[in-house]
Image (cartoon, rainbow over all chains, first blue to last red; front, side, top):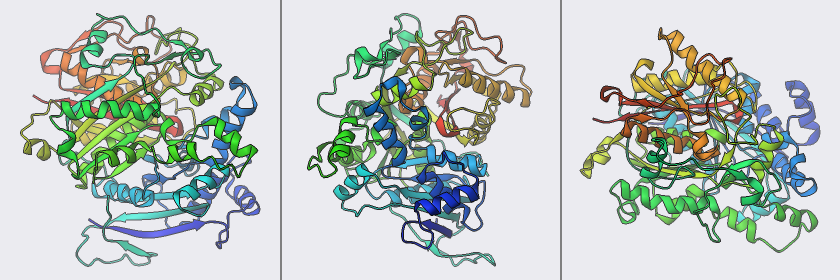
Length: 202
Length: 404
């Protein structure tokens, strides 16, 4: 089995599609996300919106080591500063790990399987290999993979401990099931084609 | 696109820990009505919290200095392996995978450390962060047992445990490995206790799913572990499994971040997919172990889905259903795995208890849960379903099969 990478999109500070306050404010307005959309959710939706050929029936596979840091930090600050029965309910409900892919599903009306994965060891490969499993098991013709991180005081500390520079980005990948991973295949005319994933270590 | 599965992953062993007990017999005696239900206590009496909502805490479990969720997992994995006729030595270095559904164990929730970082961003204290980064549950179990198969921690809120089972099945069906250790686990913790409290969905008394006098949910803690294998893998070692995962379905209703679609559209879609994968009809489902948290929105969504599915398949009524949350509390990321295990135990015993806590079914719901225990006829002890709902709009359905 093989998986085709059909398209990708990316936002990050310093990239053509940067991830700063001005950019996100403009994107939130353009995408109708409203003032309550957090940074990570806005960046992911922006990246997905720019993804060519995005199908609305593809399972969503979300991978983030540390999750939606702006919400998690706000929740923990609430717990530090206020009695427990006065914390912000939105900080809590939107801090859960699958809140971002859930918001993506709502924004694009995607009534599809959603998997929110976490971890620190080779997470991108593990998310991609699960996407490969979804496609190989014949569950879907396409899969959308979202990889994202957001900076915060804790995230910066964690990234350094993991051996990374502090970073934030939102990257999305559209994958397609290949019929035969070993034989030559035809790329459909007009397909924006970037790479072919021949195999993945689980 | 969804079609009947090429083969049915078999369940060769399981283990569980919750306020329903620590052994199969503990749980079955509770289901049979021979043992009293756990009495929940105020959260502030059992964990570091000022909240007084009723919670289900497993008092008998001591985690020492280890993170509590991980400690529960570590206690159960050897028991599940043993039940499957396996030893740690037999799986060490093998292409066995591991998938863990959890909520608390994958998010850094050490509130005092946030204060430290806020007050002193250059603090040299890394210990809490290092502990967190080194104790991701799936990665930890994979390291400790030297597993060479895929390792995933999935955090789909309250459906994490059910989604872990589905992920394991996908790994097996795709040929990525032959055996998966599937885990759902969550401890009682201050963060969700406060979070659910401010959402206004917690009950001041023991939960009463589907009852007209329901007031919300009680949080709980639990872990469930099951060993899922390809039939060929189980056969190689000469073991005869008692259960199979006959089908699974996952969907997202894309309606609201915390509230399920009241029409039950996502649950219906997930249920249809599970039945298609199973190659069976709704009429063959002996009973449904519902998510049944005890909130109004949950009850409306699930009963609308069950009634709607019955209507579209021409059945006069949906399969009998119950919720086991009054036995255990809502155990978040553990619930889907734990309740799938309970579903298999009920199939084994042939007895489905009346939905605990429900005395007067809410007449506004389109269908009512079991109000009397159901003795399953011998020829109807084959298939049963377990359902889960979650923040983010996720819906999950697992179908268990008792093998002849």
